[in-house]
Image 1 (cartoon, rainbow, N blue to C red):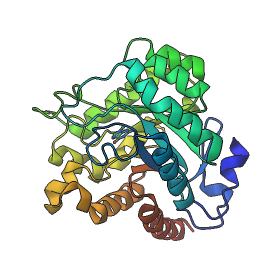
Image 2: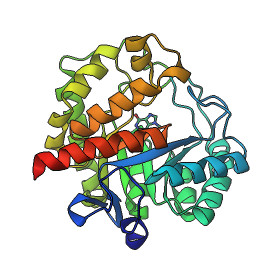
Image 3: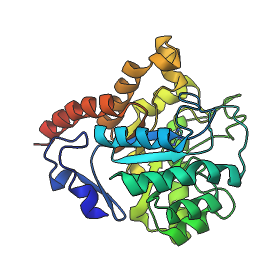
Length: 297
Ligand code: 9MG
């Protein structure tokens, strides 16, 4: 696994060729830093690309494109997490994601992450070839901590206030940055107590999950404070409604705003960005990485 991702030729946003000081190692996976995680929603109702990649062949073609464009990881999810989304059964999630995970891991040279909170889906997805778990509920569902500890693969723990169905009703914080940081630090401790190796953990402030646009901007402006948790940071702002609020653009017209957010996140300390538009983001992050490298020289 390490060789597969440490020998990535011209892929990834870091200055090419990648050199070791820019490698980010999460458990047994190694990435050029900053790394791009491509979003592959296999749900009929996701907020941005609902239904586009539901069939296995369409999903596989999109995964091939994202890998070619420089995605280090492809995050495959079968549960829509947009505000107000209905719950999905484990069986439905499995039916959506497993054929796609199997097809992508067999045919595409990229790490696959499964976007799920359900222990049964975690187990089946890893058995099918997924190398990472992305959990918007930060392993708080019953049995999820234990499942991740058994599987010993990298996990992304995301902050969310409330639940997807109601989270945008009245999000409230005293100090959003401090509260998100404290939550993530506590979840890292819970994971370590459950037997998950600390070097396999990534943290994510959860933009848009129980947060107003102002909360999201405050978090983005102060992202570096999350580094006190001591783990790599993943940021997902791609096409989200805060960018729509700021620009007045519909979801399909938020590419420039999404790229700006990804660059700001990486320059603010993020190691990963989770995006829909891989090629454009990789180009933008190459520029950011070159500038950041110069800063460190
Ligand atoms: C599944 N999903 C939707 N948005 C996300 C975000 O911002 N971060 C992570 N880790 N997952 C997300």
